[in-house]
Every structure is written in structure tokens, then in C-alpha cells.
Length: 370
Image 1: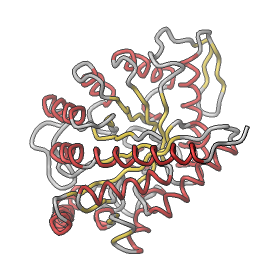
Image 2 (image 1 turned 135 degrees about the horizontal axis):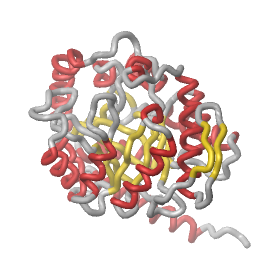
Image 3 (image 1 turned 30 degrees about the horizontal axis):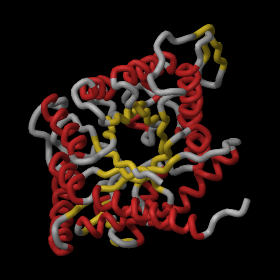
């Protein structure tokens, strides 16, 4: 089973532990970061979405024309454009990138953040809208004949696109969430289902929930699974833990002052991360939760701490659960991308190759009877 690595396509050098040194969209930094991911063995980078952030589709197009072979994961919120418009944007970007695009659909987990761009739907209504939106995008990518649509959230007649993706039949669709509504929508529509880093047992439970939702939706296949972490690595365990506590101090000093959302998190994923943090700081081989607690469970915020060997073995534990895409982002975004690519990715790929060899050997020893 192959393994893929997803990094971050950041547009500036800021993070939760340090403010950015320049503009929100620093073109030279953006290219340096993308090229570092390409050079050090990453498969793709995420161009994230924020209500006030640079437009990720245009940033992705900028990178795609300057960095070859690096795959693109474009985040998109359905509330910001009509699906017939968006599917043309995506198809055009797939053309620009010569077929390197995956689209990650963000339903939105915070009413205040959604409201900044005029979205007033409830969370369950947003999941319903996202599911309908994805269905329209898929059909628009593949239909050469005009079609009508009459749904709960969208209605139009006689639409057909004149631009189609390079990838056939279409680019992959990525989706995330940890509520029952998310499982239902993503289980039905996603090619890739994204989870935040929880302990192995909880991750296995979520994988089972998504698979059950896919089966209920009538699918004969299941999505691929992706899990995201914040790796903290150093040459020795002692140095790694010293580094982890320095980062935690910076999160308390800088990150807490930058949080603008008040009150407990509304989305199930962040609530789950805080619940894991409340159970203890350390889980399994290397999972560390104080970074999640310090940020209020904000997004990808649980850490894997240790030497490259320890972190690689921890990631292989998730691979053994069926996770095929490993998302990682450090707190010093550029340098950590280089270190992780240089020291961790090769170890994980070696571990996956060894598992494949063992699986093939077992299959030769135990052939299936005709």
C-alpha cells in the first residue's frame, strides 16, 4: 500500500509560535517553501483557506507554474462561490498544473469565522450544502452535455463547462470532519477522508465510522485516510522533549494572544482533541497533546515528539491502521519541512517498503486456492 506525504503551502513565515516577518503573501518565501517540499521528498502541499488570507487558488497556480512535480491540495469553502463557477476554477487549475490537483472541501466548523464571509447556515446545513456542492462539481467535471440541477441549496438549468480537468475521470476530492454529519457527507462523496491526530484507538474508531458511512451511502469502495500531526524532532529524545517544551512556551506566549475566536470550539474535531488532551499529555508511542490544549484544539495541533526514528515508527503505527496519507507541519515551517523530509520521510518509506515485502512473502507462502 503506497504512502503519501502532505506538507503546507504557506504564503509567509509566520506560525502559532512566531509572527510573520513580512507581508501575508510573500512570493519568494512561498516558492522557497514549495521547492523545499519538492526537494526533500514530499508528495504534495496544502494551500489552506482563511477568511482574510490570500486566495489559495491563485497562490496554487503561481506555485504550479514554477515548481514541477509537486502535487497540489487546494482548500475551498463552498460558501464563497457558486459550484458551477468553482468547478471551472478547479478544472483550469488542473490544466495549469498538468493534472496535479486535489480539492479539499471545507464545510466550516466555527459560526463566527463562517459569518465573516456571509455564511449564516447551521453546521448540519453546511454539511448538507457541501455534499450537494461536491456532487455538482463532480458532475460538471465529467459531463460533456448540459444538465439541470434542482437541490436544497442550488438550482440551475442547462449548464455545461467548456474547460475540463486533465485528470480522468476527474481530480480527487478531499474532505474532513469528526461529527456524524461529517461522516455521512464525506463517507458518501470523499476520495480522501482527513482526520486530525488522535491516539491510535480513537483514530481506528473514526476510520470505522467513515467506512460504515460509505457503506450506508451505497459505495463499494471506501475513501483513503489522511491523518495530520505537528512533528517535533531532534537527534535525541532528550533534545526533542526540550524542543517540545520550548514550543509549548512559545504557544502560550504568542499563540494564545493571537486567538481571536472566543469560547469553546464548536466543531467536533477540536472538541475531540481537547478531550484527548484532558485524558493525558502522552499517548501511544509519541503523541503529545499539550500543543492542542494550548491552542484550544485549533486545527492540526497534536504533536509527535522524539527522534526521527521514534516519529517514523509512530507514523508507521497509523499506516498499519490503514492511513495512506500522512500530513505534517512544523512550527518553524520551512526548516521543519526540510528536517522532516530529510530525516523522517525516508524512514517511513523504508518501513512501508518492508511491510510490502513481508506482505508479498506471506502471499507467496499462502496462495489462495482457485
